[in-house]
Length: 326
Length: 291
Image 1 (cartoon, rainbow over the protein chains, first blue to last red):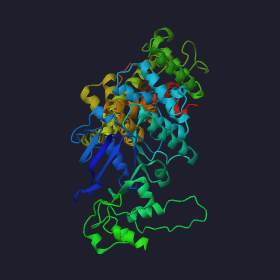
Image 2 (tube, rainbow over the protein chains, first blue to last red):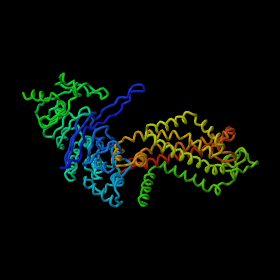
Image 3 (spheres, one colour):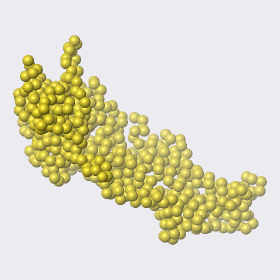
Image 4 (cartoon, rainbow over the protein chains, first blue to last red):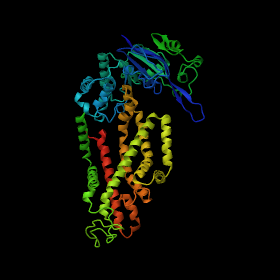
């Protein structure tokens, strides 16, 4: 399998103005995230609101160029200092969370789906038409629907259209920003099936951003848990779901409902709110909410390290693991 | 491409037909347009021709009225109907030119300000604030005084006075649309800034602009009349509707018809344009169409 996407120490900073006479503060929405992804694989990025998931999506799709770090796309480095190259940009596409906001209400499906081709290829009108019709049937919609407007479709159909648009340029990587969380439960399964099918057929790599762990468990090959702009745990899906090691991952996973009658599980309730990015806490960013916090945690920010086939950013991980097995 | 364009017009017309008000408005505007084009053929008299024997003659259906002065005569014996028919030319001309100037310049500036933000936004919006800070008539008056009195200069002045409303309206809409997902999606796909502005964002900002444009049409006619009244707009004996209204002001208690008919002409025209504007806005919006 060939590597199609690699991020090394990706950072994204924003400047927050506090008022006329105060010094502007810089907010690190993304604070050194690294991963690599092969063709045909899915990386799930999970975490609560405001942890930097969407910022990661914006950086990967080059909507915003990262402030620091390296990004490799299909084996080529992305020049983050300049305007991204159009040819490279085509390699990454995106599907948005809300299919009601991501389709232009004034354009027909045909106009929307052929826009990528119109802007990036020299295909003739008829060739574009054929390509659109082909893509429509690929995502399970009738090609006759292309002259309709988005408001004539249901949520699930709209999301299919959004997926079709993302695939028009034959990308290597598709960033899926919570693609099913706005959909009905019944439609959700259909869209997930479609995504799996397309991945299989086209050899796509997915970056699947979600906070729904049951969906992640189904679709992911690798899982990255993010907290406060950093990866706190990064492992393959099987490892992380069977033995979560970071206290935050444990808490997150314990919140997932399980469809088993009579099963009693221990819920870990997190106290407090995520820290304010304007005033980051000393040491481990999860420290203020962590049940296992020690004095050593407040000294420095823990980095990802190898531990039992996973990468964990917690200095207490061994101690916590030992505690639980006893 | 030709076929597609025809098709788009046909669908728009099919939805436009749904609106009764829009059709009435269109009908009246058609009548006005006929007056504009064929004024020389329809009007019974020369609009400036004075008849000293028939001063302030009431309309034909009153006791004192008589043929051929159907809507009566004004204080110097000019036929009111003929003046209204010729006046349609000036009033429609003023309305269309002023509104198109203001809409085009205003939309462009608002689009630039809303899309680029930063210093572009600051410069454009502060300039608009300066224009808004003056009472509109005073500013128009000042501009005409500088440019020289006359109908065309008055039209430029009124267009400039109206500009900030269009700029602000467009900018506000662009700001709210700009960060919607569909715009981001177009950007990811490779759309340039110009394409995003004019092809993606602008069509989604049109609805309030159409309404504002139709409302401004009436303001343009009335402002032109006000300038005419102050001697800075249409110069006598041009039979511009607003100017007719202004000239007839002193006879309002004795001769109701000299005031009523030009006023009615303005009212009906403005109403028709608003109705057509509403219907057009709905017909152009795919979301309002039934599937």
